[in-house]
Image (cartoon, rainbow, N blue to C red; front, side, top):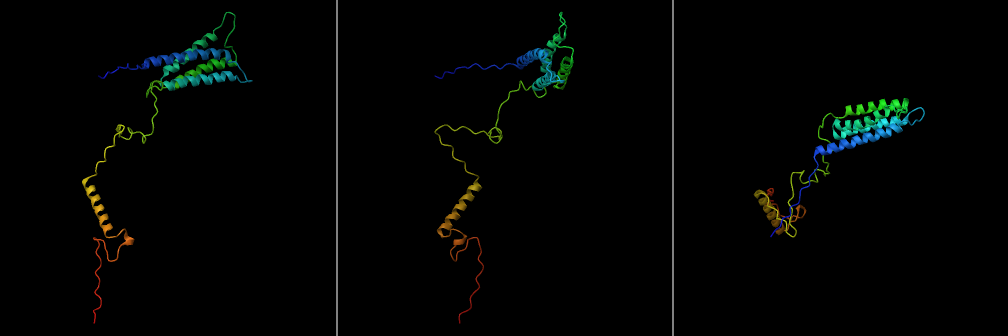
Length: 221
C-alpha cells in the first residue's frame, strides 16, 4: 500500500508586503541619517565644511539608489520623508535659543543643499515600475545556452541505473544500402590482395575503370 504524504506549499510574501517593508526600512534610514547629519554636519577642513559636503553626496546617493533599485519614486520619497522630518525639527528654535543646525556656512549648506540633493534624487528616479522592481524580481543564476539542454531545444531523458542504453536507430535505407556496398567493395579488394593504390597487383585494374586498348605487337616473321 503506497502512502502519500502531503507537504504544505511554501507561501511567498506578496509584492505589496515586500514593498511596504522596504519603504518602512528606507523611512527609518532617513530618520537615522537626519539625526546623524544634524549633529555631524559642522566638521570643517578650513575653509571647507567637508562633513556637510559628504552628507549631501550620501543623501543624493541613497535617494537616487532607492528609486533606481525599486524602479519607482515611492522608495525615494520614503527616505526623503524620514530625513526631512528630523531636519525640520532640528531647524526649529528651542526655548533656550539653541539650534542643532546653526546659521552658518555648514548649516546653510547642509539644509538647503540637502533639500536640493533629495529633490534631484527623487526627480531622477523612474516614475513607474517599468520592467518590474529589482527588489521584487527573483534573481537566479543560469549557465550559457550551449550548456543548458533546455536552451538548445532538447531535453535528455534519464536512463535508469543498471539498464543498457537503447541501440542507435539505423539511418535511412539509402544510407544503409550505401554502407553495405562500400563494405562489399572492401571485401573484394581484400580477396584480390589489393590494399591501396600503391600496392595494386600488376595487371589488375578497378572494375569501373577502362584500360586503354593495347596496340598489337609486330607480327612474327
